[in-house]
Length: 386
Image 1 (cartoon, one colour):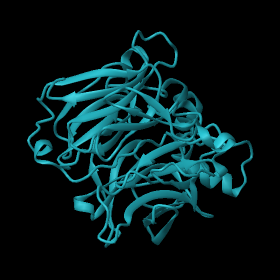
Image 2 (tube, rainbow, N blue to C red):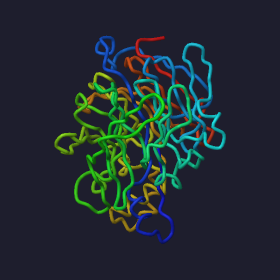
Image 3 (tube, one colour):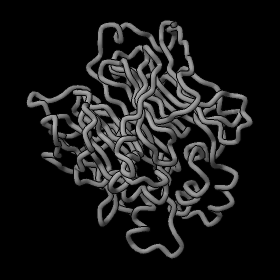
């Protein structure tokens, strides 16, 4: 998640980026659904979770489901790491690059190479307010050669196709800052094992502050509808609600995926019938601003100011920082199952991602105040028991 906070007397560019806002979140790359995944009823199947490490955040599954790449934190750039799920051994993927080892996010691609989001030159930053408008995309080979710049800005999560195209390229979608706002862009990522580039780039949805329409800034999450659409997270300023939308790649038509009154952010399971949802349902079950209250205070205040609320600061002080728990939800929004219950105590279960076979999830638990009693770290959950 990224927090964009306006500076005092912001210039035009700063105001535009501040409009893009806030707590934007995590990645999913997975091959096509398997028969095993298709048979799982995620609403009733036994679910077992275990802690892998007492540290780590922003996990992402390898294509074979045997490893997880992750960062140290979700707020400050760090080296990228990988854990072998069988041996539990951790190795650093980028430490050998010295002063240019720091990433904001790291994703596996279908060929086990890596897509990286990082500050310029991978020299590090907070990963938050100061860097959200300047984060860039890099590609790193599976042999861990020095990352190659893809010459594109980026902000937030990135959608990655579950399988490559016939020519070996991989479809990706992401939001990048422009001179006038944010653009949800789709492209083909092409690599030959040594270097990489982005091809066939085109805009799917453009956000400019003040433009009419239900959706505001877009954050790409997944390719859905068999690859025909990109699902993205946004905030409805008019209704003060955070929701999941999608854009049809061919027609550019934008529509809501499902609706809830809470702040929710969702990735899809491989079968696309269920979603892995992060929501503030437990921490803010019926508050008047529960649609945006999972944002940090400056973010809530900023949304309220865009909505014309004169008492934005006072409202934000009482209606912000409400933590997430993780849920399974049917993608029509009608049925939901809680997988964690930590946010009432002040902890945060977030940065969740689904394994390629759909049987497991990975996520992180944070305890910002250190008083919740829940053990922080990197977790894995399995449907069907141990």
